[in-house]
Image (cartoon, rainbow, N blue to C red; front, side, top):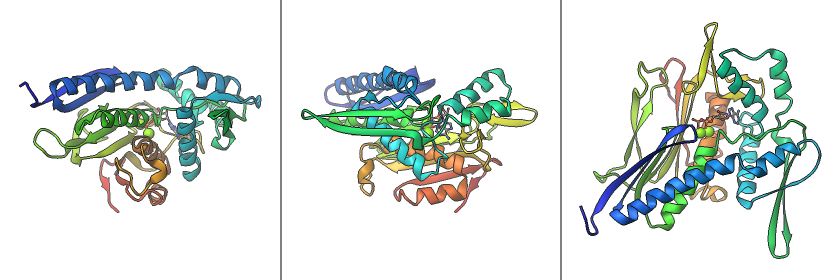
Length: 323
Ligand code: ADP
Ligand code: MG
Ligand code: MG
């Protein structure tokens, strides 16, 4: 191919503990530039996730001292706190102490003691995250503080969505029309159409499939984002029980709501959700985690606040749960 003809350029990279695959359909030069821009966004989002501001914020937890944060981090924390509130803490952006405990448990393949769970749980509470923005000489100064000692921010449930929003905005600015960004199948951005001129085709993983990659269904994705949360990605078995990575902060244990997987899609434009414009990846990522922890019934109530969102619920028996 050459000239102005569209090519399909692809790049894969190990990032955020998963394989990211970026696909861009444009002329050769444009698509190569878009791919490297996309990779740069991924790297930057990952660096920001364990950046100095969060470490400083956590180090000051319980002291009452404010920490300056970037406007971008301020916005992410504000939106994450809103989903924490709307989900009554089923999703909690301050779940870090608890999720770290369970991460260690996964390495040791041994559930933590009830005492340790209780202690970690006491360090969780989105209401104790305080945020403020002040005008200072024509500039906005953003600050945050954690009001309980030992509190930790966990961006694990939203980082991929956040990265997709960054890629979307970068590609939009570069006038990319047709592209796909797939972050290990757990968050996917689909702009425009594929080579066949059709929506991108996304395989919905069967969480109880025989082999990794077994698809339950194929979902068309066009100018939408998709995020999935499942109990089959990171877990260990102990005495016949599955201990996965989606923790209910209200109990301190992996959520058991009869769900094995939750898939949420949102239109990129988000016309009905002005407050979330430009953040549809972030929103879909947080919603899939929140709904997993809430379960089907409570999850649907949360979803009612976000009309353009569509959800696929898959039960622990591997079946799709109907309306
Ligand atoms: P994926 O890792 O595939 O993107 P999720 O978006 O559901 O899946 O994120 C899972 C991660 O979210 C966990 O590894 C953990 O760090 C974090 N997490 C787990 N439970 C909660 C919760 N109740 N609230 C906020 N974050 C959570
Ligand atoms: Mg999530
Ligand atoms: Mg996610």
